[in-house]
Image 1 (cartoon, rainbow, N blue to C red):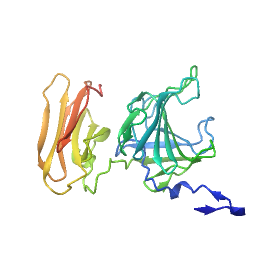
Image 2: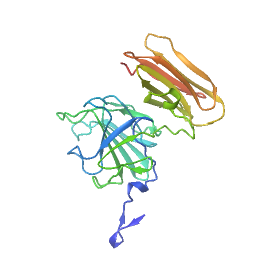
Image 3: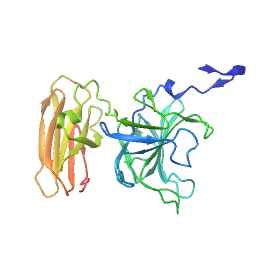
Image 4: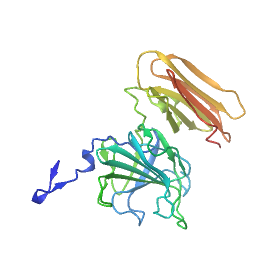
Length: 281
């Protein structure tokens, strides 16, 4: 608790938040945030992009910055300029906002894990408000907008306002796993999607040079051999898989997939993730 002049109790700064926020994108991706390019910003909001053209990020995966419960998952219509909006309650009065989404992948009341997919980057807004694709991200504490907007803190470090480029450490809670998805797949691959396999690990889809790669990283029983699997199926082709009793991860499973859709997934113990046919092109 911090005391202001006159013994009034002030809200603590974001750096003191108990919640360990991470960048709201899959592990290993690099994004640039800007707080000053939009006239709509009132305080410490961020617009996040990673592409070199206005809509290069359209459809890119957005994940939860921390574990919590979804409060809002709705298109705001003419209410405000947020368009498709997801908000997450992280406890202690802390909330995160994810706006302008192309797709919302969660529903109100749903519990989400840190690093879980909640939607994709879009450019939805109020009718007649044409914007380019980006993620509008906010951290709030308590009530009283816009005074409740806090500086974003990622991986324990306050964002370098007004502009900073960061690599996501939002790796789904790797539980001390010494390996990372990009290290498992090799040089030139970067994470484009991820999904939890229960509470025991995370399945990652990576892409590089026309080739997809899938690995399933354990976050429990790390270092002890236990059942894990990973698979990848390119549209029109055969499914390839790697499964067995592994200490750290299953995979990598790689297939050339330029211009085609893929199905991907994996398991940790009895928990399984199976994607739809997606990531086409």
